[in-house]
Image (cartoon, rainbow, N blue to C red; front, side, top):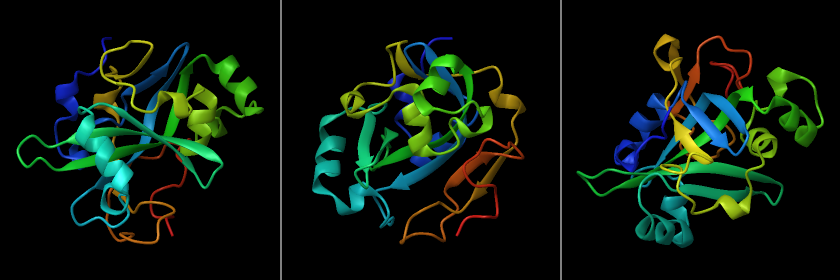
Length: 196
């Protein structure tokens, strides 16, 4: 299938985060079906980089919807997000990718991660970037257009039941049910109802 167009991301990040469950994240020869996302919004969300970081606000001003926002978390793991921009309000936000079900390039993913456990290959935001080979050089690349690095629809999307739950690993905005995950899938980072 062709990648999503930038118009898909010209919407509220919560809508995008939910609608990306079951879609595919592609980097070169590796692909995974999205099992878990988190939405972040510049308005009223103190956990969002757009709320706290001038560099993130500059990024959102100079890039179109569908652009990858990749950053190093605690100096250890690359995390990949996609920029969303609501046309109606002009407000921006991000969707963070938290877990994937590996579907293509699994041998290469296992080598990168040093594990044969398929369920643990991409069961966290740092794990999935390591498995797919996504790093700082992917920052500010479009995820809407280039088939070699993109987000694309999947025929599986309609069959997945989606749950909303609390986000993971943040100190502010923890009460917001802005994490979306495939119900009952063992490859998510944290099962529904287990977030702290």
